[in-house]
Length: 180
Image 1 (cartoon, rainbow, N blue to C red):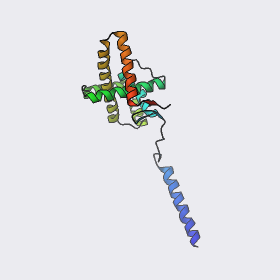
Image 2 (image 1 turned 45 degrees about the vertical axis):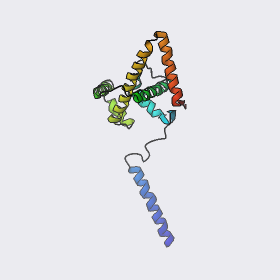
Image 3 (image 1 turned 60 degrees about the horizontal axis):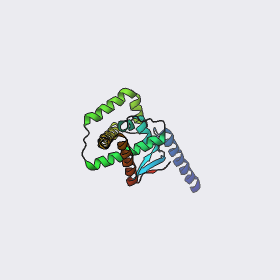
Image 4 (image 1 turned 135 degrees about the vertical axis):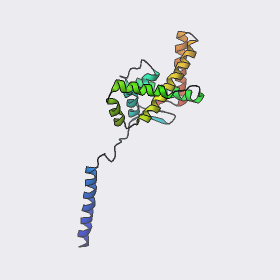
């Protein structure tokens, strides 16, 4: 008789958890382990980070003519923007106003319409988190422009060469690794 009771208890527990799993509104494990595609000094970039950047046109804040068809080129630009932001942040010479961030968010809402909020939900990021990302990109753009104007003093061709060398040296210092 004891063994029959033991099995009834096991069946009850199994059915209980099966029902909970089936009626639960969200999956118990909604996040899938993401593919890591790059890193800088231990900061990991995942495929969804790159997709967020592409979807909300964040890379275009720093690099105006950025095409998003090639994921590898886009990833390199995303990492370059992160490096530019980090170097500029150390110097603390640039300020990004709330109006600049707010204007960019309004611009995205105008372009994307209702899809803007759907994508925020899909990527599970808040508007506040998106504002932080936008602030970082605007900061990187301002610092990038500052450096570009400095290098233009060497002449057009020489300035481009020095700019490329600067970005390569930042990658080397930061321990840039492309993992895909």
